[in-house]
Image 1: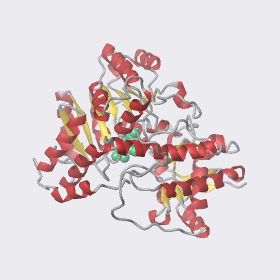
Image 2: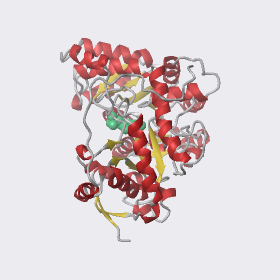
Image 3: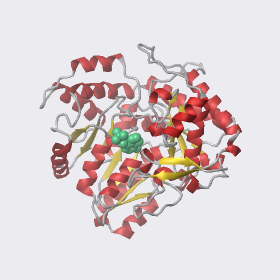
Image 4: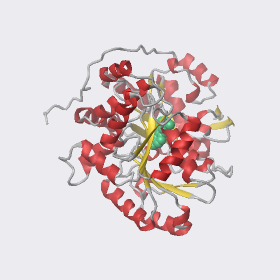
Length: 460
Ligand SMILES: Cc1ncc(COP(=O)(O)O)c(C=O)c1O
């Protein structure tokens, strides 16, 4: 390793997109028009967009070249075979089923495996995962280890599943009613925290004992593999692709959004070993996504993912990726802003409940903080808390386990000076945190309310 401390982007910039500053008065008007829901903003009115790392990254010259090679044949296109080979190189599952993005893979898998009376555990379900499980009438349960629910805990693998709780969960519901165990790597809703191979092995052995399949929600598999290499004894010298294959070998299948560690702007897949499951999934795929050699994707999208999968396991890329996210998290932590520790792979999570103790969780401290960051400096983050997870399927509302604001860092998109600006804005908001007030919900849809709810600021 070279001795330099400065994180450099391991690429040169090849084409650029303008971003534009707005005035505070303009941002106030945009917020009111958007019903204080940052999903409703026009992205051109956002200066630094940290809403999500999903599909928002920059593609490489190789990926753009792949778009030109894209073959748009309906069936059996060479682009499909390049995609399938690139996926199988890292995830050697018998069946690989392309989908237009991760949630399509989830919908298909849970439509086959879920249903009333079924119970599906995960370390922490992502919002669409939970919604797709619940839409089938099944119960979605989060069984992350206790440390994973404590923002300040420095545990190296806070995404791990609580194996004793998993055992108890299976005993409670009966193995016949638990059709699958899901482990999300890294654990997005729990702070982008990694899962160790040791934990995956322990989960696997519980699954084996009860003959329950284990499926990875593998959106950020490469970032998870990097953390294993950095933190898990015995892996310091193991190449990243080998660690990924070791993760895959412990699972019976996976769902994937290629918009994350596929380094693509769209795409995903479902993979499994079981022939009967694959057949049932392909039947559903054909109903809504497309033929099994394109699954809702253009041939050029398949090419972009194939190239992205080779680039995402590159060590220079991953070192830069993980260190630059930590750069943001460490700067905020050092300045006393409560953040989920240690910094996750793709995002920094501000602990809004700790920063804004004057706001009751049912008045949405995370939403209040996200709105304040936009108002202050045009930064768009995403509430991950009571707005996202507070409404239960029976209609009751409860505080979520945590009220966070996720600042997700798009891949290969922003430079260190953009991030320095973000630090400055967050510190300015934190300095006047005591003045912030909560919000009420004026309108919400029946499901996934955070995307389209409208809010109104509560009076001081
Ligand atoms: C852990 C996790 N699972 C599933 C998904 C769904 O993927 P997509 O947005 O491609 O539908 C996401 C997206 O953010 C995610 O983070």
